[in-house]
Picture 1 (tube, rainbow, N blue to C red):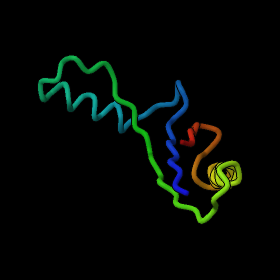
Picture 2: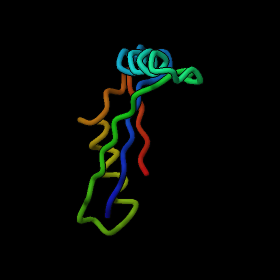
Picture 3: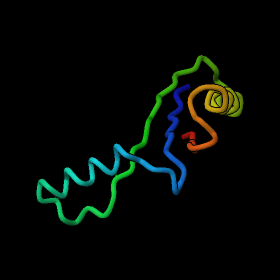
Picture 4: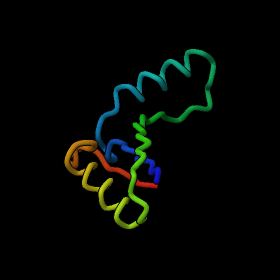
Length: 77
């Protein structure tokens, strides 16, 4: 079973990479850009066939390693 985890910075946390990308896009003439935020994506393929168990396992991975709960939030799909 394959699950996708999207990790992004919480609202209000500075995102220097997103800010620099936004500035660069504007310099390249993309004037409609309001802002850019970075997102890290992991595709995790598990041998687990039970959807609830797979989600619980990936949630544990997020809490223990993949995301920093102080500054990041995650979404599992």
